[in-house]
Amino acid sequence: MDFYEDFARSVLFKLDPELVHDLTLKAAGFAGSHKSVFGFLRGMFNFEDEVLSSSVDGLSFKSPLGLSAGFDKNGKTLGFFSMTAFGFVEVGSVTLKEFQGNPKPRLFRIPEQKSILVNLGLPNQGAEKILKRLKSVDLIPFGVSVASMNEKFDSDFDRAMSFVDCYNIVKSVGSYHVLNASCPNVAKGRFEGPEQVELLLKQVKKNCRVEKPMYLKFSVDLTEGDVEEISKVVKRFDFVNGFVIGNLTKEMSHLKKHPRLGDVVEKLGGRGGLSGGAAKLKSDRLIKQFYQESGKTIIGVGGVFSGRDAYDKIRNGASLVEGITGMIYRGPAFAKKVCVELSEFLKKDGFENVQDAVGVDA
Ligand SMILES: Cc1cc2nc3c(=O)[nH]c(=O)nc-3n(C[C@H](O)[C@H](O)[C@H](O)COP(=O)(O)O)c2cc1C
Image 1: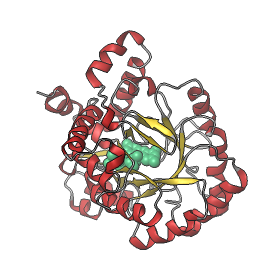
Image 2: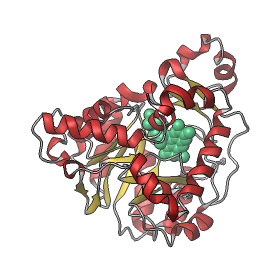
Image 3: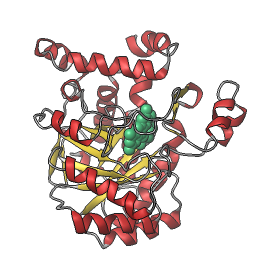
């Protein structure tokens, strides 16, 4: 009997998704700041095995599974997640100024697809406040995901500078940084055309000292041609260590006839995106292409629910993997469940360490 999957989830899934998210953040924040419960939390949610520990771009991880961006946008729960089997957390996405995000409701569950329809629009407390909070945190390796402001820019140059200015504020905290070029829910949409990527990287090169690993996050909707073009551009900027693949899919037309969400999708008029099951196959395919095309580090994300899902991404070329929807559907022991299964797959196939399995199917 699994308490979350067999009981708690059916109760929580009757409540508004964002309310549950906020309550979970509060509970995790509270538990993670009370040392007296750390032993209990470790017993419930941690798992460690040498086969899972690895070093990527000079950073050490006890497991290759991270909590993906979007769960802890303000960096309030790192204490809690350091007691779990997660090897790292990606905080954010963070923007230069604070945002309330898009009007509610803006999160919808699609259980039959194990997905979430997300139209949050980057609510977060802004770079300065988050910097202050994270300055004293070193419990677990964490990255900071940086996004451009959710507003209408006069030019792509101004938008690129909105990434640059935010990055320059938060770059002193965290083990690595991600430039999230793929948020589907902001005023101007994604910033992941090859020319936009080039403009962004030129401005980073000109205005920032990049001293920690940096990754670019793209959506899972990129085409093969996009991957080729983007890889060519990125090869010219050696401060980019690799890619986070990927963000939500915009392929939502099948939901137009959905009895509960048809009207919602209609009203969104192309805004928003789908996570989880809807993103998995696209993510797996793109991971392989980016790995083959760029030879750079890949952090694979999209539809990780089990050790098998994580293992597939690693075999396709991901050095690290992340999940968020998996935790929503499988509960706080999600990371432990994935890591236990992943370690079994690795050992069964004769790998001494997870690093040896990276890209074997690519
Ligand atoms: C509720 C929610 C909020 C998200 N917010 C962000 C975000 O702020 N920045 C970002 O880069 N990705 C964000 N994402 C995308 C996830 O990080 C991830 O790329 C995507 O959901 C696919 O992974 P999954 O299938 O494990 O959810 C969000 C996803 C969800 C479900």
